[in-house]
Image (cartoon, rainbow, N blue to C red; front, side, top):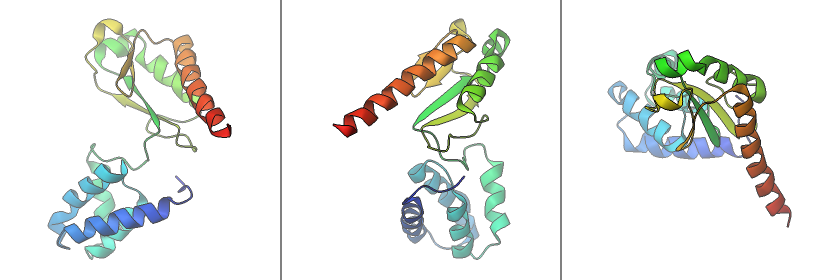
Length: 171
């Protein structure tokens, strides 16, 4: 994913600060990755390159753990992150159909973020709301009984919020 204007500087500043907090040894690789994830919300390629250089490691030795552990994201999260439950109840009630609907409507695949960084899409294992299956989480809000039509309604609500904020900026 291409960096937005000003992101490179933010990444460099955060990663440089993080690297100053740790001894430059391979044993600190995962804690450094965790700290980058915590501060930036994901681990950009530029950060992995900087970490590899600082720890005197080949880039693949940083990329490997970053892609192996599920806790790490390599794509920036969206401002609005849609988490489609794929637990057994949700899957059986149409979770995959809901996920497919989000993918079509947002024009991204699961695990991706829209180019404007407004919307991100991911699946989660279970959110514990099985009676509302299939379920989608948007931030802390639970959306239940999600059908393709409900997907459109959910997205329209967030499009309206985005449009309202843009219009407020014009005043």
